[in-house]
Length: 80
Image (cartoon, rainbow, N blue to C red; front, top):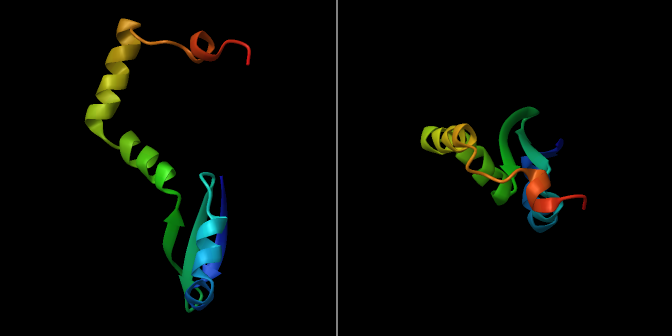
């Protein structure tokens, strides 16, 4: 994961290009008056972050691991 920094004024001037530059691995840090204030991240990454902070989601993962009721990465993808 990498981060890029852009000032709010540069973001206003080139919003489309700035949004295009953000991918699933990047975070765009927005600064105002030299201070970091906000971040722009890819929507898929945000959804992943939100899911990992959901206690119900984490409980389901724990339950599946304990019951062995899941497929491993190797089971699904083999030697790709």
